[in-house]
Length: 69
Length: 286
Image (cartoon, rainbow over all chains, first blue to last red):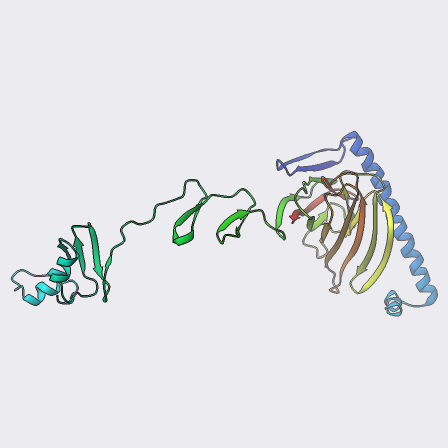
């Protein structure tokens, strides 16, 4: 299976290379994907908690923003 | 001597009058042995009359109040090299200003004459323009000679909807990125993040799949200390196009990158799929 493509721009020579990731880059890419997914899950969990709080208080996000402004 | 009457075309059979002779034919360059002979012969000179003096080999003309020498010396071209320019030195003497070197600007030296010199500051130079592509796009940067680096990232969209974009410096995947972030969606403050330590800086969220969609993302990164070998102090912000309600979303961030070498590389990453478009312009600012 082919690895994702990356673009490398050497601005000293203005050479642009599009190539597949190296094994090292791909290993980092997979780590990044896990980190991106964890961040996404964290944000989603925070949003869910926030919405539950709004529901419990019976106010909308706009009303909450008004309270904090 | 009569005043010059200008130019007349004589036709066959015309009678040449004294007036025609004095007003037309005598208005050429009259030749005299010297100035004394000229003044003796022309007691009432008219403005614009010419007289050549054989003793000094000078052509003179009457200004309306005095005889003046016609300047036939011209200017000797002092230029020697492509790009040279000419300026007036003392006594209005033409002088050569040799071409400067690349990037120099024209200034005035203490002697009151122009010279080429390095820009004192404030200049902004476009170092590179790159189109985003692939899962990541890595751009080399040479910040030497610049006080800070400005990065403009425009109209970014990706192959997968609602993906995020982030950036990494010097290909560093260590936890050396700390920031404070304020995120908003139109008038709504979404939240803040305090000094999270990560392996990159989160730059944009919810990338669209087409530049035509209003929320194609744009960002601006300023790296204030790109030549430092410890911390880079930075600010960066992103903004998306307006949604159906006219609200623009984005984020504003202050950040520190714990560097171990001067800035050499900027990598823009997309969280899923590949970049389908977007342009990165890097400027060096003095």
